[in-house]
Length: 610
Ligand code: F6R
Image (tube, rainbow, N blue to C red):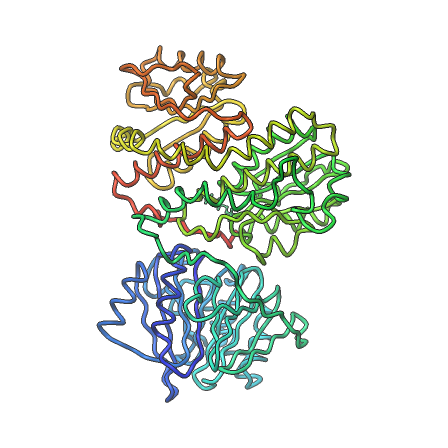
């Protein structure tokens, strides 16, 4: 959420900052800005509402240059989408600041700083950082000390980079609750909120930890912990293969990422799934001993990741014989919940930085869970670092704001967790063999399913003028219906709701008429006959049905029902297989409607604010 890039070099850093912002744009695209210090101590700034392209055009029309610079792409939290609220923010044309996160006590800081004579020009919480640092600087005359003193006054979350016009040979960065990474160059150094922003200039990274403040010059990096003591942070070579900056010929990142699913699931399984099962150590060192005592699983996550947790509950209870609760992280973190004996807390997250999920994990760790596990796509992210165990999904960087391949790799990880826990809880040999066979067949099944594209494209034409839609599923397909509805609403802006189809007659049936498309996911499983009855209830009331069904489920297309036959698959992987047609449907509806598929309105990837 919001993107930060910074650089201190001997060359003009504008191209580095702009390319970094382009790579981070998926994190926020309400406005973008850059502040630069040139070799003569001049501080200049350009900001624009809208996407990074608007900023790049402005810089082309009125070029500014600098050897030290900070840049930001914003997802508005405090203050509307205006140029005045765009970062970088200044204090008296001397201090420049970019910031991710939220300073929760900004109102009282603002009142205090206003009393001290600082004039505010924006409605943002970030501007308080600039003025607070300026105030501290006036008292101590050292930028590093000023930032260390300032951050003590902030409540909330920040990843921030600060420049002082009068001290042009260093930048100061601070992190608490929002990620920041330092990229190491030769005679130049960089900063970003995500390493991917810096791939064109470096592959060597130092990840800051909670409470760290660092001083960065062209040739040195000094890190101090929250107590102000000097600390060493390891430098890591990034081996992320994916240069996600590239759409590989696809029109959108989302389409590329949908099509990558067979490959990334193959990668996620590779070396982890054997002919006879899995080794528990794929969840981390000592996982087998920790998992051996688990009798209950509590899953917490947000959005799409929450839907993968909802699906996993069916598997964990059906196959692994462990009880399981799933809760939205933002709810879990603010209520008193009961901790079952021998419970495992599982967080799920593509980014590993989602503020609510992280806060929920921290709370859970105080509550006496036996162990914590994260299923996550970003190595070194906060959730990975703060969990006892981690299963890394190998989806590669996901750029489309709407999550696709992260979701299906999470589900793949959950099937393996089901086997690991089932091993200690009397999972039947039949179920064990079924999941192994199903997982081995999964990548090829997904390749087959992607062949449905043409049929789905044609179907999408019928949706473009619709304003509402209903998604139905039963059992482990109910969360898949929920995920289908979320995908459709977030990228096509068509209102979509999902129901467990047995719930229809308890209210939602009242919505059915010939302007309400009803999308049904119907694998050939033990609930098929029940589902068919629900479908007839809708048909009898004039609803238009779009049914994604196993061929053997015997649905027939007619004037009130379009049937798309999905390749037959083992029941354990059906939730993963049926996800793909729903992703494709949302994608093509959005393309027909002409929405901004990769960067839908009002959203951003990696929700690092509450
Ligand atoms: C929807 C989507 C979001 C995320 C949610 C959690 O397509 O991507 O609902 O799933 O914001 O994010 P992570 O998984 O990064 O914790």
